[in-house]
Each structure stands twice: as C-alpha cells, then as structure tokens.
Image (cartoon, rainbow, N blue to C red):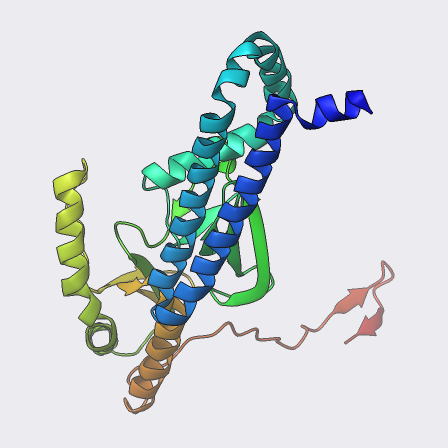
Length: 305
C-alpha cells in the first residue's frame, strides 16, 4: 500500500498525468474550434486552411505545454533520451523523411492544396497535405486524358526528395497542347491552313494574351527565354497525306474540352469547303491477281489462270 501511495504522489507521475490531461484538453479545444469555424467559413479554401492552421497550433501548444511541465525531468534523462532518439530515428527513418518533406512543402513552393501534380508516378489534384502524407484525387490511369478516376491516393511526403515533382498549375497554369489533322493531297493547301489557323485563333486564342503575361512574369524570376503563346499551324508532307499540326496554349483544366471543340469546329468548317479540303485516311486497295502460265519441258500448257 505504501508503494502505491508513493507512486501516486510521486511528482514525476503527477506531472505526466497533468501532461496527459493537458493534451486531452488541447485536443478537445482544437476540435471544437475546427467544427465551429467550418460552419462560419463558407469558402472552401479558407475553411481548409483554417482547419489546418488550428491543427498546427494545437500540436505546437501540446509540445510547449509538455516542455513547460516536464522540463526539469527531461534534463535528467538527456543521455537516455539521446540513445533512444538515435534508435527511433533509425527505425522510423521513412517517417522522419516524410515529416521533413512536410516541412519542405510548408515552407517552399513544391505544390499547394488545389494544385495538379504528378508525384511518385501518380497524377492528380492535391486535396490535402498532412504531416506524413499528401492526398491526391487521381486523374487518368484507365480514364482518358485529365479526368478524375474516382480514386483517392495517399503518397508519403518523402517522395518530394526522391522523385521529380511535376506541377501543372504552380507558376504557369497553362499547358501547350497540339492536335494533328490529316488532309488529302490534291486539295487547297492554303484554304486548309486558313481554316485551321482561324479556328485555333477563335477558340484557343483567348488564352494567348493571359499566358503571355504569366510567361513574362516567369522570365523576371527564372532564367528562361520568351515563348510563342499564340496558336500556330505547321505542315509536314508524308507518303499518305498532308499532316497539319495545330499547337496552342490552354488552361490545364480545359485540355480535353478544348481538343473536342477544335476537332468539332474544324470538321464543320471542312464540310463546308465543297471538297476543296478533305480529311485523309488510310486506304488499302486490293487488286486482281495476275494470270499465271505454267509450261512443262515437253512444251504443253498444264495450268493457266
């Protein structure tokens, strides 16, 4: 009984109990604030940032509270804690690398919530950045182009140190894209070029001026040269047809829809040319077999087809 009383009334045990109770109170306060602000803040991005900020402040308050209560006791166990820390660091090196990745993401511009990235071979929109993992709403995979597949993917933050991070929407939220149009030989090359250039200017030209301004800003901050943002049409003649390539700038979220608009409009314009311009396709023509005349040494014909 005496040993139990000594344990219960030990100053160190009392402080540990106080720390646990303090952690619980901090957790409840943070959860209450997160729920109350979720109803008041209507804008999705602001609500997300408020929730993450409150969580970070909660972690910080818990650490400072523990240090304030257990400061004297921790100094007495410095050697033991050092050995334990070395062992824990070796066993949890991947976890530590993920936390370091989270710190890098917090204080750098690798990517932010809302960006479209390709990370660890997976492409998607960033919907959450946690201490250990980044959560993506996956794009592509078995789905064509840049549409959502419906899968939510969680990737360790340590990948920012191991593999390239492709960001589709950070400093330059446009992409260069292109489509190829095969045109038959014998038609009007100049009319085909005029149709393609006009359609590209009308549909994709609206992005050129905005993209040019953003690119100028990039040139001020990076060692990068000027780029052509206006739609362009180039021609290559091959064995089968004239191949026109339409190159243009488009927002990363509208790449698929822009392709569909361009193809539909170009096909409509070509249909109105009265066969002056026509879409080419691969044609295989099978001809009749030639006549075979087989003659034996004796001079008589034995087979003729």
